[in-house]
Length: 324
Image (tube, rainbow, N blue to C red):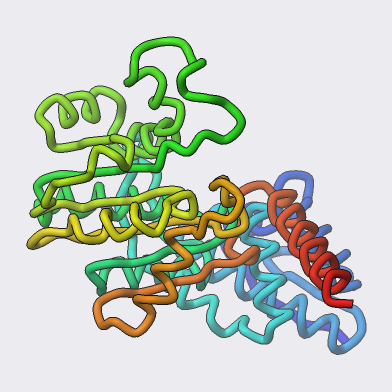
């Protein structure tokens, strides 16, 4: 069987095929087909089902290219997973996803997977959103982008980012410097996200004015946060009491995002994670969204997805052994 796709734009074809035809080779290998290009005509040959799937993959990638995407390992893998699940028709939902904001360097920030789109839509439409998922799924990055977008649009007057300063292998007292220097390493990922969205100088000015605050969770106690976009990161490391304290800081015209990875809890043995407790208690309350991302939403290096899968498989096997 053979299928023909016409591509008139040379840049489009180059983006699709990749450097040294690496993308085309990946599609050929994945679906056991042969792809050739001549005079703007793309020909796919092979067994019927394989050709149909390769055709679907290329059509999906072309839709992404038409929306300004640069094709890379991540979006090729994601297209493969959509086809495996029979969801290739939903690629348009991602391609048409609204821009969240533009970074300081001019990079457009938008969701790259169906899970991420659901998460971003939930942030837009709810006062409190829980984003739960493994490393690399963009939980914090997209939340920071949404916060910066709301701040630029003057929907809120300040951004507050916080994390629990849970000791994971090192004691705070043994770290060098004053209290701020001791806690800064815990907050560094939040600083990094803001630097990318706003630029270091703009971030510094906003911080000096008090429009942006990055602080440990303990600093939130006793406050009411009005007109604020508040992000609690690494929430799996909160206790039940800390989570309740954080959620009850919410004031008028404010929005809160809670992110966490319940597979990476650093709390002392026997301590219940506040985010697990909150999901159970708040799951049926209107205006609170709970979005669960998985390894298919990972947008880091391909190996991150493979590592997450391997650990999940190991955990399942261990649970089976315990139940025998």
